[in-house]
Image (cartoon, rainbow, N blue to C red; front, side):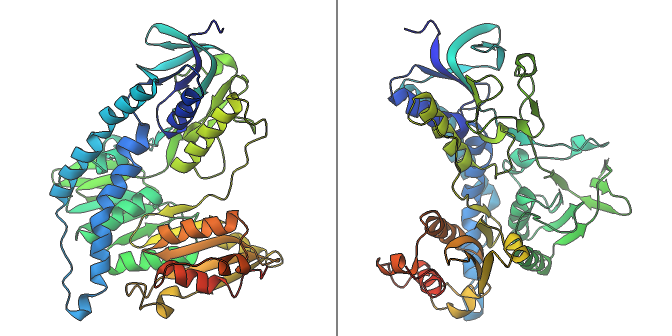
Length: 450
């Protein structure tokens, strides 16, 4: 019998922790999670879940707009009512998750956890010990070190706005800014987006990003690239952001310049665990320099996308490792990722840029899906798909520009991970008439036959 208080102690209760905690508890381990904020972490309370809830009516509005020329009115969105609904529904997750963890028999220790030795965590003056410790403290929005930084807001603030300001300035043209800007534009607000880079969404296909920027500009958005914000000043009727040669005024400024790992005040340095703004350094088993201390989720220093499903995957892997169900290094499948703009931009596997740079390895097939499938694609004629195949004919990557990108991407991820051939697809029957059926129809002629 162990002399420790717990078999496994998690610092954090978000997706990087709770999936593994539940798996371990169900296997008979004594488990606890340390949480200084709400149960479930950022995604559940302040990020993904809130964003997708608010996004719902905008999807419908976007769809109705495609039928406007047929005499069908586009509905207006009542942001105030929508936000009240969001606060009620998302606000219930914290206590609900607390009850869920209690039901599983997982203790939640409230407070800030700090490592004091390889097996001990101090929580606001009280110590707890465990055979294994998992750090899953996530990440937060970064803040520019400039005068007036206090006047800028972050994603958590935007997702809690009772009233949408008449004019908004987004500093940074990454995922968060582009998603929020899409909603503000749909509400008829004045939107400006500034970025130090030459284009938006640098990690996504340039052609699809250009299509999105053009659409947003047609709706009234202003983009200023190759511009760095040096200071922000408050005026009587708003705020002004200054760059090297321009100034931009708005009622509300959102900073979306990236995210920083939460590695401060965890006691990592004293234990010889290397960490930086990028995250905690781990090996291919997600172990830190102290073998019984793991790290999971957005707090890990890694090149793969820092996404909720990635955190969940890592959390489960750590649980399986502790239970002795695997001794293999972690191997990630292809990771689908989306920008929830209107419409979506999505990609998975080998990127379009990589495929174009290596024609000796990959074949790129671009399909004007919306133009040839208007009858089944809700008149979304601008929908566009790119399939990337290796020299054997297996699908190894894809990119999608479409309102239906989420559904399509999940299906394509399955095709890639299972190395499905045209014969595999022909051996199954898909619902008709659907977008999925037409994706299969487009794939079969180009995939490896058998």
